[in-house]
Image (cartoon, rainbow, N blue to C red; front, side, top):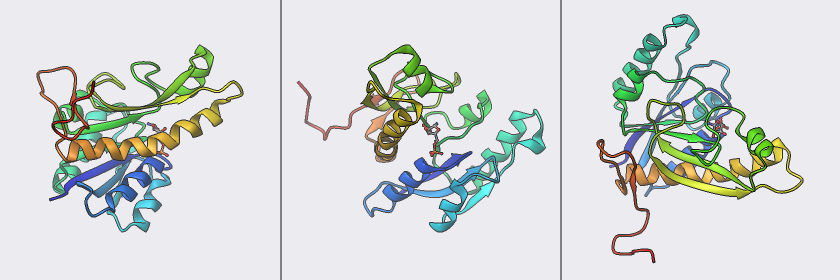
Length: 213
Ligand code: GRF
């Protein structure tokens, strides 16, 4: 049985596209059953429509500053759709403890840096400014602090001498599109178990019995 996953977006939805493509494989352990956006102009909505995936807009603006009420509407929709796992993919709203708590250990996020380096915005510009030689992306379980939580998977890319923000972002994005489907696969198939009392994921992508040196 495939796990029913929802993807929350705010923008172009290229990671959503990668998840949809991966989930089309018959042996993929999750299906993308719902797409929710807080913005009616999110490019990813068209992507969902083309793939015949139910997609809805729950704008945050009508809720004014009441984040918890907006999240309650999202949570209600997720539950009504029988969603088991939630993937944040370019969802540009800070979450309150309410939604994080409701989906504890079942909500993933992709972040365009090698966390814990560069949480927050403008990660590629900050990586360039810091002069790091290696940059990348992270998929993690969502905890209350922004861009924190047990790390499920990471992918690294080199920072090259002539990089600007766009070139570096494009190199990272290629890896994001590989990494997110891999991380969702691990969670949906039960290969990455997480004990709520622990503060790190028990992530073992190796077939059982295969132990690294
Ligand atoms: C990605 O870089 C993701 O890591 C970050 O927001 C961006 C979303 O891009 N959280 P897209 O909408 O998936 O194309």
